[in-house]
Amino acid sequence: MGDVLTVHRAGIAAVTDLGRAGLTRVGIPGNGAADQYSAAVANLLAGNTAGDPLIEITATAFGFTATRAVRIAVTGAPADITIGGRPGPMWRPIQVAAGDRVGIDRIRDGLRSYVAVHGSLDVPRALGSCAPDPLLRVGGWLRRGSQVALAGRCRPGGHRTSCELPVDTLAPRFGSPWTIDVTGGPDAGDFADLDGTLLAADYAVSPASNHIGLRLSGPAPARTGPAEVLSRGVPVGAVEVPPSGELIVLLRGRPVTAGYPVVAVATRVAQGRLGQVRPGHTLRFRHRPVEDAVAAYRRQRHTVHTLAAAMAGPGPAADCAG
Image (cartoon, rainbow, N blue to C red; front, side):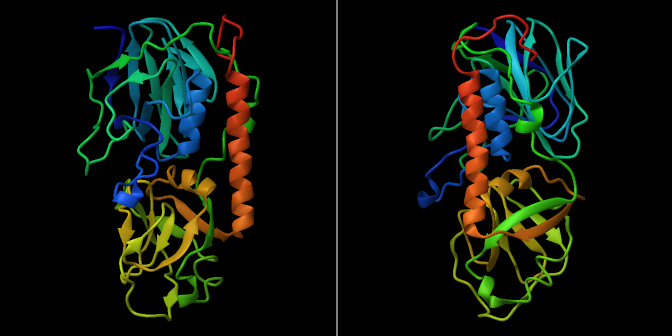
C-alpha cells in the first residue's frame, strides 16, 4: 500500500468533493460539500483543483497523521488548528511533516470545516463524484483508524506554497445571526405581506435540520393561493412553506422534486452560508434582485479564479505556512 492518511480522532467527517453536477434531470441530487466556496478554496490553497476530494468535518474534533510530508489547507468555520502540537493558521497552506499529528478542534461560529491535502485523496467515485449519498449507497463517515490513500499526484515545488491574498479577502463572515439573501420564488405571488413576515422576522434553526434541509421556527407567511402544488423540480436553496408552518430551506442533499410552495430561493452565495448554519442559530432573509445575486456570485467566482491563478505555477519551496 502507498502513502496514507490515518484518522486518529474521527468525529463526524467524510471525504467529499463539489458533488454530482448535471444529474438532477435524472433524479440524482448534487450533494457534495455543503459550503462549496470554502471547499473550493481549501483545495486551491493546497495546490489542487477546486473539485478534488477533501475532508468535510461537521461540528466535531478531527485528527490525523500522514505517512509522507504533505501540504494541507483548512477552511470553513473557524476552528483551532494544531500541527504536531503547534498552532496552525486557517485559510493558508500549511506544511506538515510525515507523522506529525494534525488536529482540528473547537469548530465554532459555523458548522463545517474543510481539510484539503496537496495531491488529493485517492477514493472511489460514483457517477463522477466521491460525495456521500445514502440513496446511491456511496460514501460514509470516517472512523478512528480509517486510512485514506494519498493520491500520487503530489508534485513538490509544482505550486506556490504560500498565499499572498489577505485572509480577509478569502474568508467570509461566520456567525449568528446569518443574513441569507434570497430572490423571489415561483410561488411568492401566492403569499401575503412577505415584507412583514419572511423579510422582517428572525427564524431559529431547529435541531431537526440535516443535510437535506434546515427547519426554521418563526412566523410563516400567509398563503392566499391554491391549496396544493403538484410535485416539481426544486433547486438548492428553495424556501418551502409546508402546511405545518415550519419553514424548510433545502440544502444540497435535497430530493430533486417536492410539492410544497416555494416562497423564495437562496442565492448561490447564500447557499454556502446555509451550509454553515447550525441548530440554535438565527436566520434573517433579505430580498435581492436577480441581477444583484448574479453580481455577488460573479465577485465570489472572481475571488476563486484569482486564488487559482495566484497558487498556480512554480513558487517558493520553503515554509508554506504563508
